[in-house]
Structures are given as structure tokens and as C-alpha cells.
Image 1: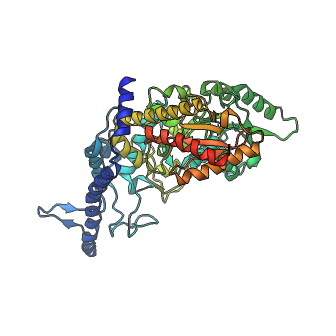
Image 2 (image 1 turned 180 degrees about the vertical axis):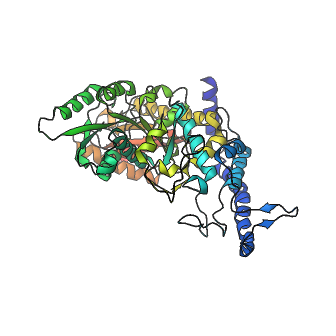
Image 3 (image 1 turned 90 degrees about the vertical axis):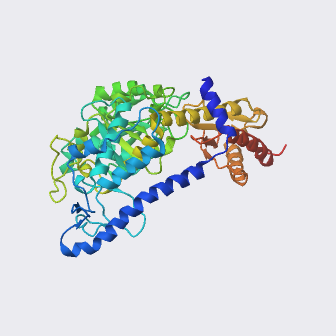
Length: 507
């Protein structure tokens, strides 16, 4: 702990150089991308011949694509996501160079394959089917597999797919659960079943949104009570809720389908007991999903990963590297121990698009595993960040963020004018509290809410933006620290809170 404390202390006094680092990386990446696009421009005049251009030695120069089978390309890429220290700028640029070298150059005039073309500007890489996105397909499969392994998914088909955010990942997991457990629904829909989804009373609203999208309706979602002290879903309450559905006293014919557990709830940051919830799900043959959109990256930290104990028992897990890991938005994965389940659940015949599995039996047309077809190559964001920082770098970021959350919670806990709602230290990176002058809350919820809202507004003028959430005694502050939060920032926030509090509540 001594070395970690020293490292965090040093971070607060050394000047930040993020802008310089970013400028250097952008210039370096630009030097790779511009020649890539220019090569397609220069090859355009040759297209009229029906041939590719030749270099000085008479070798073909196909700017559209360097065709490789998956096994061959895997050998040439040698993609490595560091388990220890990252490879920094050198490794990042080498990987981008390989991505460009072996990707289909959609800027090329010869790209006449799919229902899109390059844009006259900056364009995100796209994952579609293997033929038009070979490198990005392998990067997604490799990255998802290595990420899944961290959660204890180590089967021969372990891995996952990227989705457009945590809500999309959760939606996809519900569709997969339905089609995997009740495959007839792929043809007949939900008409023969009245599915029920169970989620923590503190769970994310995306479960209800997904239920609406899947034609089950918001009423299909049953909120399960949480433990008052920890905010975790109560396994006994879950079992009782499932039994009530199965008893079917009203003759509604409802079918328990899916349990949404949470790793890091949105407000309090609570982690459910996955082993206990898994036992209930196995008893009734219900799909167990873990929404780790927020807390899932704790798996990178030796000090925090115990909170994810039992994650290997889940049927699927959502994790968003764009949150705790500082990977660019959006970057979300849906992980599993057996991707063949995803394939059976989502595949539909489309001979004009999908052309079968690879020689090794692997599914390389990733659009056949997801609800989408063409998708942004969000997995590349995690892969490049992983190469740059390494797993050890992610761990340092996460541990630093937890140290800052603990520091803030501790400062609030000992302050005379605040009442901590979170545990100390908090389970995740949110610190929740009330303003309570002299240690006393207002008697009415409305007054506590007024104080909180007005103070939040006043903090913006002081350069701090925080949020608030409803609570049993009115709305309370919800401050979310991150991997870049410094000690000085925490100290300044506490000072600012005390000062604006005196403006809102006159002595």
C-alpha cells in the first residue's frame, strides 16, 4: 500500500500533461491514416483498366484488401493484450498499422460489396461480416475472449460481442435468453408465453425498456427487494417472487425467464451476491444475467475483483469499458461462456450475407451473433487501450479511483455538516450524502431536496458538476469519481460544498 499511496500522492502534485500526450498520439495516428486514404485516391485512376497497379518490381498493389483467411490473419496479427504493463505509444501505433494494412479499404473505388461506402470525412471502423472486416472481426473475438476469461468464462467457446452501450447489451441478453430457453419464440414470438423478468429494485431502467422492445411490456418486469443495509438484491425475496409467478393464482400462465443481477448499481454502487442468485436461477431454470456495465471492470483489480465472485456462474454479463476504464464512449460487451448459444439464439438464414462458419468451426460473421448487422468497431477502442495501458495500467486506474472514492467518503463522514448515505468506503465509485448542518437533516423530504438541488446548481459556478438522486429523506448528492480524479479535486469539492451549503441554509 505504501507504494500505491506514494504514486497517488505524486499524481496530485505533478502537472497534468494529458493534452500534450493526446496531441502526440493524434499526430502519430494521423500520419498512418492519411496515407491509407491517399492510397485509395491514387489507385482510382487504375480502376479503369480492370486491374490493380504494380510497384517498381512488378508486384501487384491491391489497395482494396490484402485477402487473408482467419487462421492466416491470426498468425500475422499476433494480437496481444498485455496482462501486465502496456506497450504504450509504440505498441498502439503498431497495432493501428496492422489494422489498416489488413482491413478492407472502403475508400477504394473497388469497394462495391455492401450497402455503404466511405464518408468524405472521419469515419469509424465498421464490423459486419468477416469478408469486409477481417481484422476488426478477429480483434473483437480476441478482445472479447480475453475479457470473458477474466470473469471466469474459460470454456472453448467463451467470448462475447460488442454492443452499442450497456442498454443495448442488456436488451441483447434478454432476446438471447428467450430464444435460447424457448427456441420456438424465434418463429411464434411471445404469444404462447407470458414471460417475467426479475431485477433488483435498484437495477437499471434499461431492463424495463428492453422488456417493452421485446414485446413483453414493462409490466413483465418484477422488481425484487434489496437489503436495506447493502442495497443488494435479496436472494430469498427473488425465490419468493419466482414462486409467486409459478403459483399462478390468477391463471395468467406466466413464465419466469430471466434474472438481472447487478455489479455496481447506478445510485449506491452495490454488488449483488451472484453465487446465491445463481442457486435460485438454477433451481428454476431461469437465465442469470449480470449487468456489470458500471462495476464489471473491477475484475482488473486484485483489490476489488472479489466483488465479482460467482460471475462465472452467470449465463451472460454486460461490461462497459467506457465507464470505469476510461475507454472512449461507446464501448460495451456482452460476454458468455459459450458463444454457440448466442449464435443459435440469433442466427437467421441470410445467404446474401452470411456464408457459414470458418474451417475451424468458429463463427466469424459476427453480425450473425447480434441483433445488429453492421456495427461500429467499438471493440477496437478497448483493444487499443489495453495494448497502450496493459491490464496492469487498468488496475492502477481503477485502484486510484477507488482510493479517491474512499477519500471523499471519509471526508464527508467526519464533516459536521453532512450525513453519509453510502458505506465508508463505498462499494463502487459513487459517494452519496445529504447536507445536514450541525449533523441534522431537515424534517421534510421537500426541504432536503431543495437544499440538494440548489447546492448542485451553485457548485457549477465553482467549477464542480455533480448529480443527485431520490432517497428516503429526499434527494441526496451523488458524486461519481473517476480514474482521473485527483486528491486536490476531492479536497476542493468538500470545501465548495461547505461554502455553498451556507448560502442555501442561512444560519
